[in-house]
Length: 207
Ligand SMILES: [Zn+2]
Ligand SMILES: [Zn+2]
Image 1 (cartoon, rainbow, N blue to C red):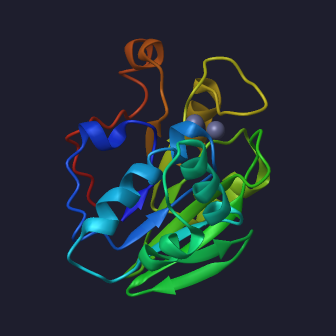
Image 2: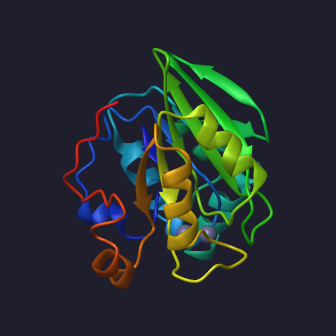
């Protein structure tokens, strides 16, 4: 399962595309979505002909098609539907796929459909905040989750992302949850390495 497909990440991470089953997209900003068009190339070539479940806010397929068109790729929507089984999410919707239950939470970000997700398996819940400012649904997601991957993109409070101060407060309030700060800047990583949990590329996180 991939959660978001940022620009250029396919260059730096080895992904076994034969085994890929699900892709969750939180929103369509380039640092969350753009490499989906690269992943398509791998999926068109893969031996495993099972469709990948693309779990995303509505308009995902249309945007992917238009992105391909801009890049002069000869790829119709019908072609895309050969590799993807699209599951359109909306606030509060849950889908059960194999042993996973994925639930969407509409959060607060400067796009039309910003989602956070919980992924539940065997009674354990991991939450992924997506990009969000502080909002009611973020709290709902935290309360439901055992571990939370949380946007910690800024040092100053703003309308689109969570700040370090807000995340530190949440960590104090919800001591029984494990928080991992994501979407951090180099400065935040340097200044807050003792206070925030910063997963690195090789982290293995066990529930
Ligand atoms: Zn964003
Ligand atoms: Zn982002």
